[in-house]
Length: 165
Image (tube, rainbow, N blue to C red):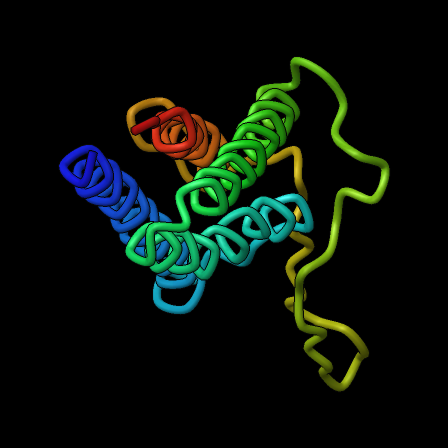
């Protein structure tokens, strides 16, 4: 019985650590593209970060809950992380679909910029639109990659949530 509890604790701790590391790496990468690459986020991009902002500390909570053998609570937290990333993957698909013009983006599809004032008023102020992808890699935009990464993280979290002794 103790062996089963140790094995379950190890599995839940491993899943939590992987989620923590991948979610943190993903959000830091997004911030690096913004700060060093000059890619300003649109309002949907900012909303897509919420799942990561939740998952990073929640994965730590799940890790320490599993370490303390509070397995039910650890699995509940992992389930909440899975749901958050599943919803985020859907938001990423919606966002990518708007970029590909499969459907319209939100009406409030501009923002996330700094006003630059010149002698003649506002100049060189970019309007960041949700329905225009500023970057692609292997055919996917930031929103498309967010959908892929979020779906993968949702699967990892769901795997952990389903673990039993």
